[in-house]
Length: 148
Image (cartoon, rainbow, N blue to C red; front, top):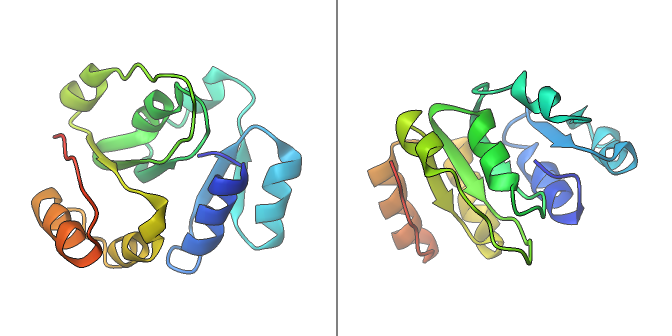
């Protein structure tokens, strides 16, 4: 999620590991950059557009730059799915923890400095949380918080 510089960077890097990747954003001119590089995109014009895709994705990477972007990412993620949060909003985020617990979602925060490690995990579909946490901490030196 997010068609800004960070969202584009993530989408362009991960498209090599997941050809079915979808980049969601609000600005057609920004999404056009991803489309030129064979990344599928979807323009979101309203909250209804997001709601129609609720629970559709195994993994959602949130890079919208909006304080409420994390809640949108949680909404889009299927039960037991993965939410990666890498937004750079200067405003505090209020997270609806009920969505994580009741809908059995998991949340993981990863710094972009180790994108190559996340790409490895994405490619090898390491979704089992306890194993995923250990792999990240040992191999990449990333501090991981896991909920769920």
